[in-house]
Image 1 (cartoon, one colour):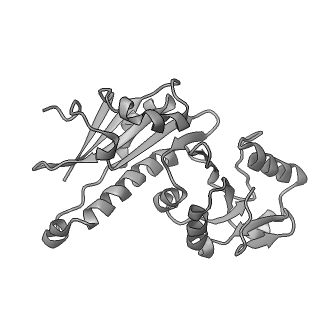
Image 2 (cartoon, rainbow, N blue to C red; image 1 turned 180 degrees about the vertical axis):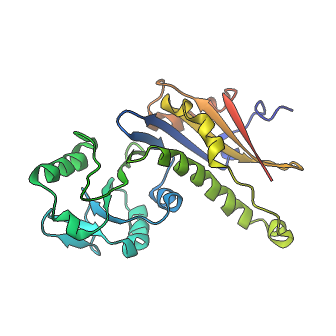
Image 3 (cartoon, one colour; image 1 turned 60 degrees about the vertical axis):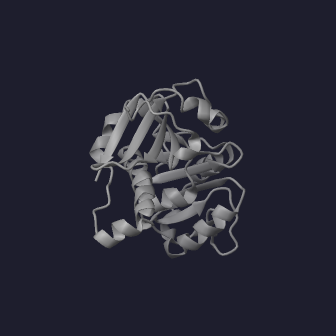
Length: 251
């Protein structure tokens, strides 16, 4: 039976992730991505300046009058944030001394970003050397993430699914015992979906048992017909559609 045509319910999949890229404004809308998954996928973060949130165990910058979390404390902050039901808005930065160089205009722009979840202009500041602006909405189950380098979006999506595969494989006793290689998605293959994500797509990953094939990643183009938070209410119907593209992940 054709892998792309086999009918599966939402629970038969390991993970679903919606991605809609806005190349011009350097951000992407994502749904199905947790803060923990983001941090695990992008690797160690710099310090993060909280644009909206309060954090009892954080530090306070007198110049911006905003709280921040030092790099060494981010794992603890991730756990705390995952237990919270509040929106999460932050921007990373290299050094607290650089925060003190922000002009009144730049500080006002940061406050605007935290309040409106959008940037007046490019939200990447020379003083901060930030790579991301992370804006999540718990009510809508979405994250709006600005990327200094938009190729980092491809790296993020690739690593999110590779982390899921690795976790699944770690629970496989026989794979650990035999020492078989863990299958991975190569980032250059994810680049084949570059144009698709500009219209909004749903990625869905499932595991199969085949001699030379372990996982399949399906892509379904949603264009503008769904808001990100509406996808999950209609997920089973969406999965009845034949995937627009299929990526086979071999052992």
